[in-house]
Image (cartoon, rainbow, N blue to C red):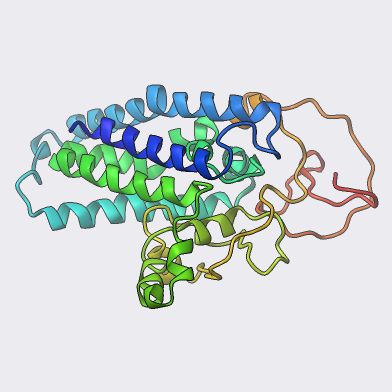
Length: 297
């Protein structure tokens, strides 16, 4: 089976399970901009950004190292997988982590957290430039040039299966937690790959709910990177609310193409107090993250 069809089948399966167990569309916390960001962001990634980055990376390799084309094609598959886990998945962990540490990159990533729900719909919900600058995509293009193409296709199906399951509203890991004899397996699984519990904690709204972990649980395929680098939080629970605490409103255009477009805002004078947020400290007044005396700014 062509790997693109396999990926599509995985997405449709989780989407149907989500629809059966809740709502796939018209979620209670959904706003009108959400559908636009998700549809346009996903199309931009698969039609424009990913093909451009993979092709460009391979073209650069061909110019710089023409003698290395296909050099690793006959090397063991385990070496291929190890290279992909390091240069794709681990690099994406650090890119994701850096995006929650610097103001510029967080503005490229905030679209992903702007949704007030978990769903298969939000998997590729990110700013255009977030994926364009993502180092792991460029490394993947280089690895494909070196001969890892078929392994990459298989790896991508596995990775996107895990990521889709981690974002889906259907919590498949709940069975592991509710079945005592499966607890040893759960212990291994939740420390190896991203699960609905560990990843939904990263999307939680309230930092003080005992579950949410803004500054951690960054892993995509492997949650092991969080365990290894000290950013893991495992509670076997799910936040009651999702979204961004205390952030200014950004319309669908800003979410998708910032800094080329910024939502018009009227200056406001508010009293502020320190709050926890996904984002790093503000760089200017227009980006202030605060709580007003009555309600959020």
